[in-house]
Length: 563
Ligand code: ABU
Image 1 (tube, rainbow, N blue to C red):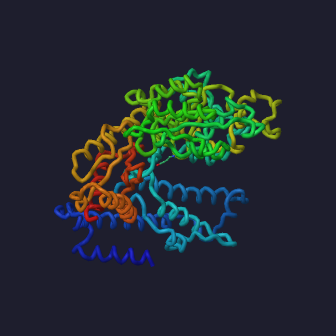
Image 2: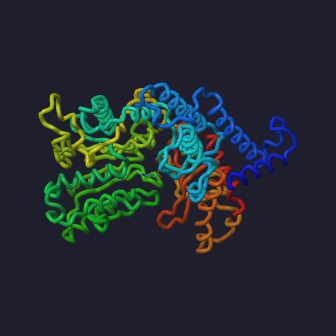
Image 3: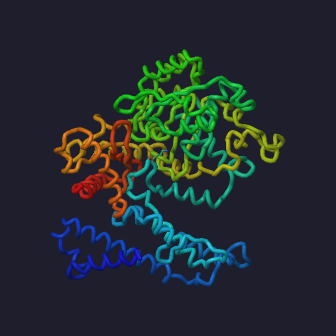
């Protein structure tokens, strides 16, 4: 039903212009008209969709509608069928890759949950007891991508992890093909060695002597942060591992009010309790205030609790703020506390000679979270927990399962790194990142990171000059986050007060809803503290250009000026 309506609308818009698509293209004066542009986009999109469908079936020599999964390897004589099928899948994937970079395509083709649940034009999510043929599977592959979100699109600004790095993608494809588990050298010899080499590079960038560093790739920043609390607790109270929380005093840890919620989650998971996570006040830029940290530490000591850990953030999720790392390190030293730096978002800045200075003091951290899948553009997921105490992760987490970590193997079993982890099975996250490093060198990452921060500065400078926008805080962005309100004309004359705040709070979600329904771009919003809903634009996609930034601004104005 929805699809039919969409085609009718398209047909109607099409008919309201005389002549063919080519004639329309020739009419330069219409190009300034947003409706004309929108129509062109829709037409190109639908032409591309149907071309893709045709090329997907016409060029085929194999009839997949009579074939099933059972006809592929390991079936007898299944090799040729397997190749043909995988070629088709690759064809679909390559089409998607091209589209992801094509500004004439939408960022997303939004459908509501009930529409996806009900099924769309030959695409049903329902599972049956009978196998479906390979033709249907190819349709399903194509449609899964079609109705998803192109996070690699240059106009996708919604998340900290954006972009589609082609080398990284090749790495992920290879990883999936190898389909191994990175817990032992025995079954992942090459990946284990790559992990060691890459982690060393990361210690170097942080400023740790490489012989002191230890680490492991984990399934995301929240888990890396969890590791940091776990290892800090073990360092101070190793008995917690065997005897549990009843054996330790009431532990307290500190993190800023702008920090990531994963620190609280870690406290909940580890039995420390969220009430024992003390949130430290920030300044107007979202940076932890060191004097506030110190007074909170003293307060908890007076109460007889045991402070043991401070999380400093290098790149907060919303403001992109970097806590004053050196001052926090001084306080941690004074009170003998474990200092963790959550640089999930900011770690990438270490690749840039221009911006790494903002993280000065990180070298004094006891542990660091760093997510190459954010600012460095590695495909999801790629996050590392790095610890400046060799062997501690192993001692903290090892349980020496006999069936995996036999001590009498015929190679150096310190390369069976899996017992450092809290998981058993572990996905290989290192290869794509290693391959990207090979392809770009550290220098290539530097160029990429600098470009993202240049884009942020460009947006910041533009917004400062336009009356329709107001920045959430003054001063050049430290990271690539730019936070701002769009103020529609109807609100501009309203005096500050409850009514204005209430209406302003609704602006970003309403613009975002229209934006998603049209699919032209995507940007996040949220409230923060006293600040009502505002947009947060973040740059981590090196494919984004200044023209895309201009497009975003124009799009927000177009969608929001009648609110
Ligand atoms: N782990 C934080 C991710 C948040 C974001 O992408 O917006």
